[in-house]
Length: 41
Image 1 (tube, helix red, strand yellow):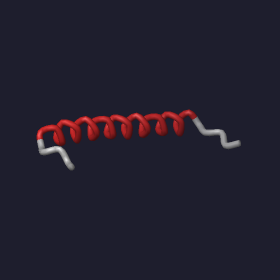
Image 2: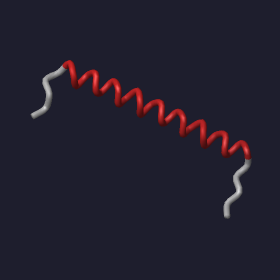
Image 3: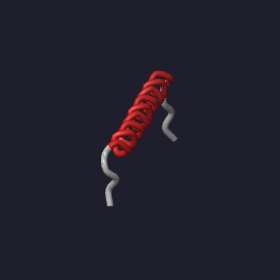
């Protein structure tokens, strides 16, 4: 079993949060952009 230091856990959660925020922003912006354009058939 791998035991990580607190710094490793903190960096892991930091990158996880950053990735999640980026994915959410990209998803919402893509939906708003797709609504403005013609819907794909």
